[in-house]
Length: 65
Image 1 (cartoon, rainbow, N blue to C red):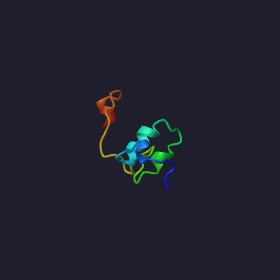
Image 2 (cartoon, rainbow, N blue to C red):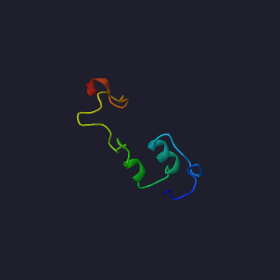
Image 3 (cartoon, helix red, strand yellow):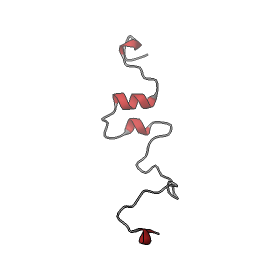
Image 4 (cartoon, rainbow, N blue to C red):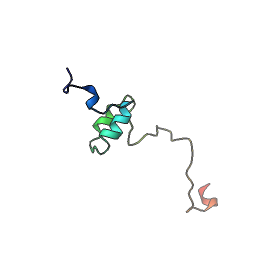
């Protein structure tokens, strides 16, 4: 049984991600997001790099190579 009498008394979300962002947006532990099928990580780029470069405006062209 549900912990409340009428399911319409509670917010309903289209996805678990939407629920996490709306209901647990300020959650410091990240527990809600960690339960997603493909959770975000602090280091999403896999080994070998992202396959693109960021500009380095502080290094001379001849040195940057």
